Image (cartoon, rainbow, N blue to C red; front, side, top):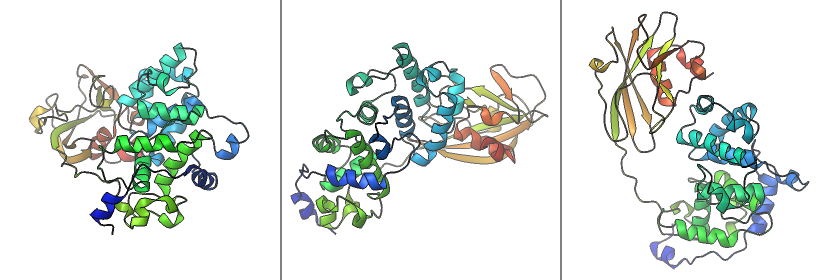
Length: 369
């Protein structure tokens, strides 16, 4: 294991030319992804579709590649162009997004599509112009510019941060090291094939330079990697200890009609899970607990406890006590019924699916179909 003295002596910025070996590795070992144009097709003149690049990059924020694949395929089947997405109903977009998390992305997705469609349907090529569109931040702008338009932009996601922090043995903890990492990537990006370089760095971090047990012997950059030479690649990137997530509590009330329909309502458009569907719940949030007792039910009925569910959000953990009742009376104001066979199509976030599944045995198959 490298000593602290060795780590302090390790110099960066990284000056090695890594593009040549990295791109050769990428040509042979790139991941086949539904939104990606592989190097062999790029060499034949096939260009990436900026719409698909943008859509995939928005979906991939805080989400894994494997989780995104089916959502991406569904979106491009429903809305194959940016104009089609711009014309989509907001509720339909939210329903298609349900389960992917970070729901403000879905709202911004449609707003961005509308802005691009209104401007003629073409995404701008520069990162600076892309930054002016709704929901596009510095990373996404750089990724679209590089991958879709071959602009020499520094594309730095979590995988790239890990790769560069190891290459240069950056002992400064994240997030303080982000500026140093970006400065290094800016120098490393080649003029030729910057889009492939960005994707190669991501693939290297995802497949070889992994957080645990990196496969350094297979890495095309191992000769240039300061962390590998020091014998302790897993030390990097350095991260401060994470504070414990607060635990919030509340209750969810699942009312079932005799025909199997479930009572739902729509959450406010602003805030956590904005615009999504939910079963009635108490007033929990990231900052406060809600009521957990049956006395907080939305209407008087024979509510029966059905256990509790736990859901982990980015900044807190939520525990919901779940209650169920049969209800044949009038529909409460602001609520609607979703039929047993149609509930899978509702814009239900994962936490609400968990609550329904806890209350209705057999609902899991319908909600995940």
